[in-house]
Length: 141
Image 1 (cartoon, rainbow, N blue to C red):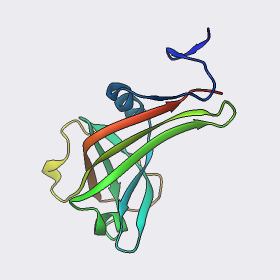
Image 2: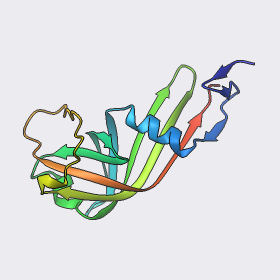
Image 3: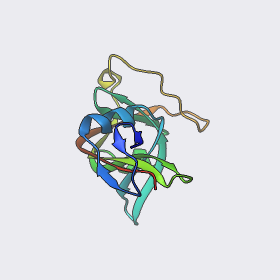
């Protein structure tokens, strides 16, 4: 039987991922989506991010909807990968609370390089403190 990363190669089977695998997949990517209930409707925004000590960190501009709406708010954060040819992929979903970080002393001591793809000043930091991390993998069909 063929296997992919230890999972049987079967037709379109969906499996739950263990928490350590979810954290590994999350930390291996640079772009995710943060979602929250905005004042007018649910909002989803892609961001460049890093994981430091199980927290998700990203930067934003001072006048963005992220800066205006996310402080002390319940959010979800998603990272995924899809292979359309094999109809397979995975998705990791983090539920937690976002905080805008105004105090530089709150930044992690082991701060990794956090590149933001959009140009401009991204002076504000946002941290998502996870409450729950779940994931699923769709095996190739």
